Image 1 (spheres, rainbow, N blue to C red):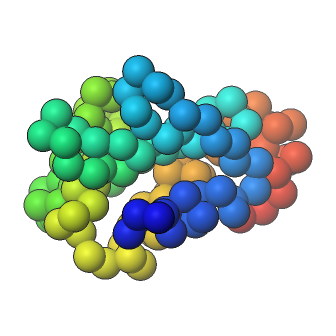
Image 2 (image 1 turned 60 degrees about the vertical axis):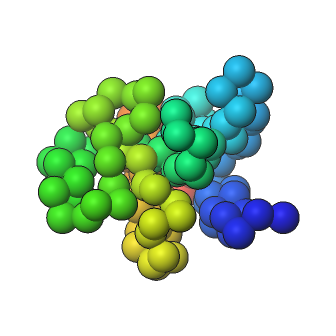
Length: 120
């Protein structure tokens, strides 16, 4: 068990989330139905990161205010962020980012699929 396994539980307990493992990237991936919302893996230095979907305005603000939040690793830097997990100790902050990513992914789904998930 890793010190970051709580993240898998946090994400997996959200309605409609599915898990897959991408071997080429050695990354855990989480989708809300068919929309990618998060990936957990490592950056090029081998440091653990959590990459999350994020709206562009919030992404910019988070990166400006917090050194543990960087542009999304190997993702569209405008709408993805990566959290340096060894440096960010605030689990509530990470949970809030996970929930934001969930809603961002859910809101990209067609309305009928959003309705299947209920409210969150």
